[in-house]
Image (spheres, rainbow, N blue to C red):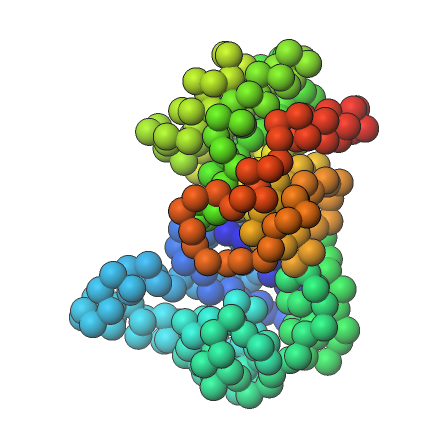
Length: 336
């Protein structure tokens, strides 16, 4: 989710610079709701506001069965689909071997990517390599996309609007919650980035006593982190199991989103919903919330480390509930 959201401001800037261009995006099917409400959505509409086409790379299935005939058929289908569109330029914003190969599959004459990608072998696929100077990944994406000959600055993005899902979101928010909703997202990509769920629960309790209605983003009905937050919140937190489309609609209605360096935080920033980030081993200078009112808490002793340790990083654990509550109330009161 984060990679797509971080790339969107660059693609929105491309759209402004080249309004007549046909733009396609290759994503894992799971993330399609970030770009379109359905496969039948009309391009450049509220249902598919950013790109003209969405192509699916079933990379999760490929990695599970790399040498199966099903995987081969899926890859060939994607190749045919991309080449049928006759794309002139392919831009790899992710910088992985996988994304670089997909760019190559497109058949585009020009393939653009970062000079220093996440996986250095990705550069083998690039005809144009861009040495980025910016610190934040959103601005780096704009630098890479600027290879098309126009200097791009991050542009405001529009996420899909599904009328039925919007009605669902309204139903989740009672009269008391409207204007006072805070969404907590306790999970993260790996344990080192994850502030303890019990602390989210205590935070929810305190916010509840201050008159705010607290919702907890739950991955599913059996989400153990969401269950801990609810159990330790003294009845203040309500879990919400939401699809990506539903999470978009719900986040639009929140007064504040509190999370670590994770997808819901970056989704809120893209929607210009105020956010409070709780950071540990990842650097907010590079990955922090962008384009919205925000605060980031990070202990001075935290060091950038993208290794996927299971236990919370030591600096992250030094961030107290008191600190988060104070920052949250300041954001909420200033956003009244």
